[in-house]
Amino acid sequence: MANQVFPTKGNLMAAKRSLVLAKLGYDLMDRKRNVLIRELMQLVDRAKELRGSIEKTYETAYAELQDANITLGVVERFANAVPIDDRIEIETRSVMGVEIPKVTHPDALEAEVPYGFLDTNVQLDEAYAAFCKVRNMTLILAEVDSGVFRLATAIQATQRRANALKNVLIPRYTEIIRTISDALEDKEREEFTRMKIIKATKKS
View 1 (spheres, one colour):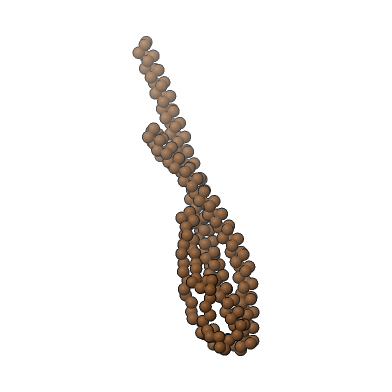
View 2 (view 1 turned 180 degrees about the vertical axis):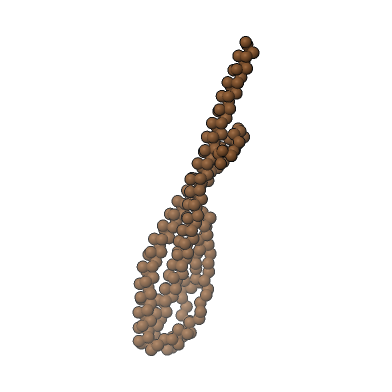
């Protein structure tokens, strides 16, 4: 590209401005990438903790369900009394322009038992509470996993842009500036030599 740019002072100034902008863009992309990586690492650590906790919570919930089945018989009729719950609310927060989901549930803290107490016992109540906890933890894990995916995708895109600036545009404009500067210096030397010859000719 440097060979295609006409060596003028105007093109030299334009190339210098473009180089400044390319370097500024690279610095911004690099900072954004670092912030996103820090956020990603925090979410990855949180996901690891959640997966460890959720496995134990599932084990507890199924153990409680088994106890309820043993003491009450098959609790399918009680399970059918539990309505389908789709009251999930999704909001977002922005991290360097990347939208990270925030998943909440109205009953995340207090779960209302949807069945009567006449034919049930404490084992069923404990099983229901355990599965409510599993649901809430699953929502949080889904939120974290989605955030990890979005951040990882954004980091890759940011890295590609930063690499393009660092490895393509910045070297390109640097080469253009060098080529134009060399051409202008040669032109100035030629003009200086020409003027000296003209002066010498006039004196003679």
